[in-house]
Image (cartoon, rainbow, N blue to C red; front, side, top):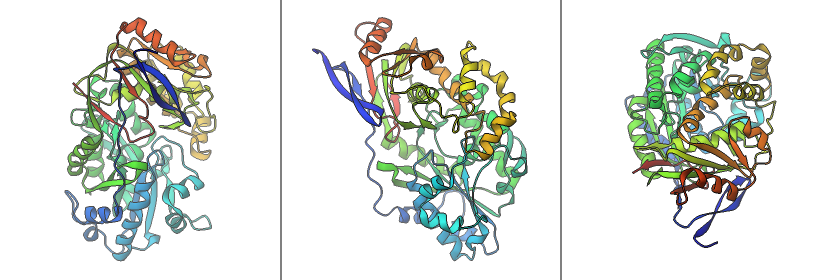
Length: 468
């Protein structure tokens, strides 16, 4: 077709070709290869931390230590590199494995299974902390366990601070995180605040009043309202426990491999980590009339058969902008997804019910009135605590973070899906193929649109868009 070009975009477990205008801008990250000796990067970082003494000086014989880490929603290689080095240093300081707990910071996500944790951490570390028997020292955070949580007060921004009790009872608390572009705060990092919160505390940072605030709907971590709440919570945690959390945060390249490491206090490591990730993954681009997002099989919190996950993957990619909106007001976002609209009820036990409620609301903000019910629903909380399902409050956050782009754009279109009705219930137009979707978008934005295609936004390290 004259005046067009073919672009291969993510589509379930393969790529499919779509035709877009010749002048469409195709943006993909170009992640560098992993560091040749990532263990040395970790050792250098923990021996020269920012804002704290070296880990070797902090670790003392007789201490009870917790090493918390990002859950398997983030790449595994950083955990498999960092944790063995930390254990080596702690053991050398006279702290045996028996005095160390490994804590998977799941937040409101599912509790990961034994097999998932083995694959994520590697066989050696797993067997050291989950020996044959039941006395394992590798545990999932539980955001609804009253015996495992401690109320720590209220932050300066009014956040309810209730967190995993190991933060208070450990002599030394270490967190292994990941820094990458995110619509949640501009950059990930400060993982304690999200991964170890109670369900009630998560409302302080994830509910509509914060996530839906226009000051949270961009990608600059330095001016992000949501980020300000995270920092206020971290300050309150450290005020309550009377010590600093020792962070070890990594940036990732190809295959999730480690390319850089920062250690120390969260306030001091943020800016150098942000600048580094921006230098690798920030791209300059014009504002678009139409943004196209390829949706792979797995992203965010499960597979993209789940319509809410496919929808969220489509709507949140354009939120990673700095300076100006990636898609202009009144523009269109098109998601290309195979989704059959089926929800894994074991993994996401509350999703269908919350989607039904949303279909009766005018805006995601109205879901706020249902939060208390779902936080306290005993049947659903049981499935979270004992059946490896996501916490019942979790789908609320996905609607809140998506509402910005729904309001900002004229239309969200899902193309190539297998169950259009599942998306109509989310207020989204679903069409049979991309050519129909693009024709519909041009009816809205005009015949000569400026188009940006994000073919692999979710299958490669995520981009940040500096919009000129």
